Image 1 (cartoon, rainbow, N blue to C red):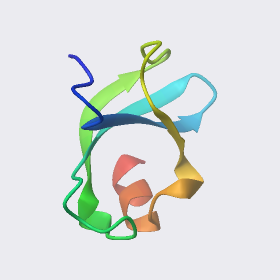
Image 2 (image 1 turned 135 degrees about the vertical axis):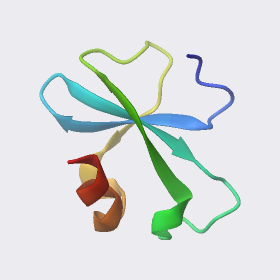
Image 3 (image 1 turned 120 degrees about the horizontal axis):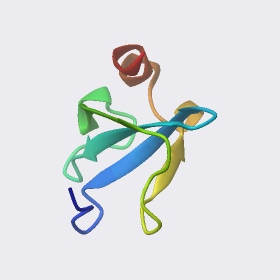
Length: 66
C-alpha cells in the first residue's frame, strides 16, 4: 500500500510498533473522526512515511488503536 499524497500516516505506539491511519483532510485537527485506523501494524514504516507520536492525536483514536 502506498501513502498517496498525505492521506495516510503511521502512529508510533511503542518501540517497533506502528499503526497505519487514514487522515481525512476535510475535518478539524482535533476531531477524532478525522483519523480512521486501519488494521495494518508494522515494525518499520516506509522511508517516506509521515510518523506521528500517539500523544499528538486525540485520545479516542488511541483507544481504538490499542
